[in-house]
Length: 157
Image 1 (cartoon, rainbow, N blue to C red):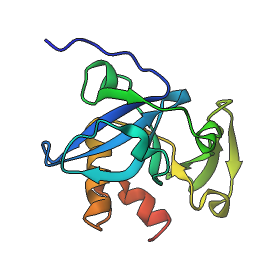
Image 2: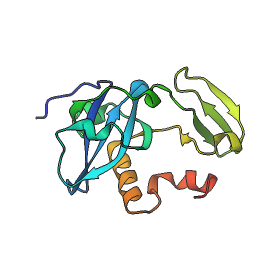
Image 3: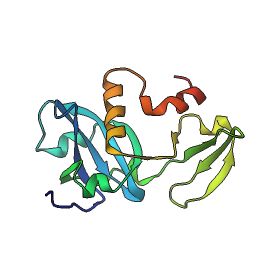
Image 4: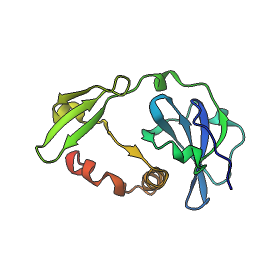
């Protein structure tokens, strides 16, 4: 039985892709978010300083059991980048009336918005490990992510 881990802000998590074919990394942030780095390697890294200047692939809210059940293992820690201390708005779309809203992560506030205000923002949802991993694979395969079909309909790429 795997020993449970705690969600620790600043922790670096190892994200195995394609059953360990390669590895990606993310950093656990406040408000349940994980910043996934645009970095992959065939072998696990042991010096995380390489991630300090790597661009961010995306930031999403994740289920905490991804960490507690050790889907992704905490392998280190880094100081939180200044850019990760600011939490960008996310959008919510209600299909039944085609309405848009902005979700303010830090306050939990939801306010009406226009489609234009939502362009370029992440959709407000919580991701499971396999969904994040599929999104990473889609990125490196240069294909659309299957979990973002509705997003692509609203904001074609």
